Amino acid sequence: MRTAKNTKRPLSLIIQSSEFSRIHYGLIMAAAATATDRPITLFFTMGAVRALTPLWGKEEDISVAKKGLATFGELMAAIIEIGADFKVCETSLTSEGLTLNDLRADIELRIAGVVTILAEADKEGSHLVFI
Image (cartoon, rainbow, N blue to C red; front, side, top):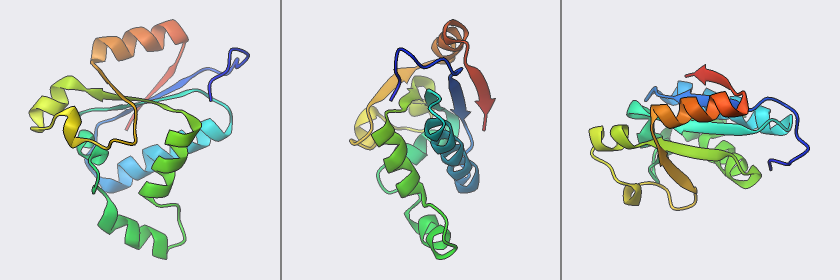
């Protein structure tokens, strides 16, 4: 969880790829950031907004689990529990034909745009990483 005493620079991950491996790795980065007590924001945009739908990544997780790696589902649950800040691009939702009602109910999502992400990153001194 973010605390007032935390002096580490926040990390903002802009996740735009629809590829499982890239989104999965983005979650690995987010989990690592939270494990080191770094505030994290995940901004899902473009095809990556589909990763926020309830059944996304289930088939790929079988293969990942067989390799002994943390699955998409496990990583997402951990990041949610720790209190990462999740944002979703409004334009991308429209482009993908989705609404907030189509997305996972277990994630507190905030609709945002690029201007919001950049303004918040500037204000907080965040590192921005594009995935």
